[in-house]
Length: 71
Image 1: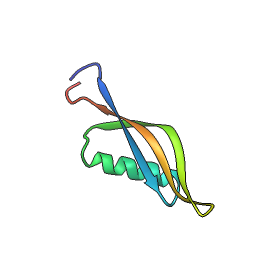
Image 2 (image 1 turned 180 degrees about the vertical axis):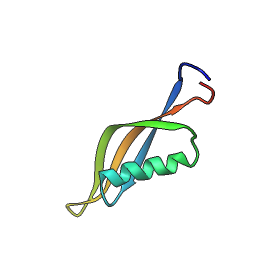
Image 3 (image 1 turned 45 degrees about the vertical axis):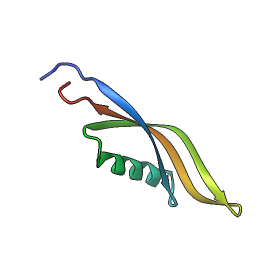
């Protein structure tokens, strides 16, 4: 086993009609289906879509870190 870790970051956008927390969780859940060894996330941008003067849905830009296998 290595005594160090090497990581890679990917940037994704999650969305939800329910709220920011739900958008984050949806994005991580979906990404985890195709990216192994996810270990951390960072919210880098928050925004939303407005329809008829009301918030229609929330969007979050996330950087997700995953460990390179074997490191």
